[in-house]
Amino acid sequence: MQLSELSRESGLPIPTIKYYLREGLLEPGDAPDSGRAEYSESHVRRLRLIRALAQVGDLPLSTIARILEAIDDDSVPLHHALGVAHYALAQRGGMSAGSVELAQARVEVDAFLDDLGWTIDADAPDRDELASALETLRCLGWKVDAKVFMRYARAADKLAKRELSQNPGDLDRERAVENAVVGTVVFESALTALRRLAQEHHSAARFPT
Image (cartoon, rainbow, N blue to C red; front, side):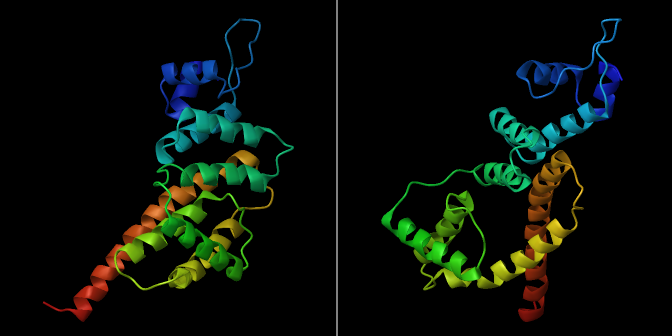
């Protein structure tokens, strides 16, 4: 296919595609004797992944480049390639300045995750996110420790196991990362919405007007 058709198939304008080509995010098309580049379905898939990372994941191009590099490097295990994408998503909002209380909460969160038996990298940014949530609860006067998250951890464990089991073993690296990014962002939004809707339902039942 030519550039105009690639634009239609991917849903991205030609100037954007040319920009991705210049930045090295997209491999150049094959140049036949006519001198006009030809693009394949692999280019369409790559553009759709870039679009998902940029629009759904709200990631900067520098981060997207790192994710694509991990995908294309076959020496990088798929688990680590997925980790690059997940960690990038977790770091979108950044962390507040550290404090003694936050450091203590992080120690408790680390112990909590160890008790769960989960295999989590020591530098996983979501450890800090969970610690920040725990510190926030305490600032609001809650007398709680990290075990307050246990019911959510059990639910998350079941969801994550089911989601990853739905990816076939022969799924290519690019599709696996795309599923991880889109699934994380979209279904997290859906989960939050469902939780609020459920709370409204049970509030109406418990506190009738």
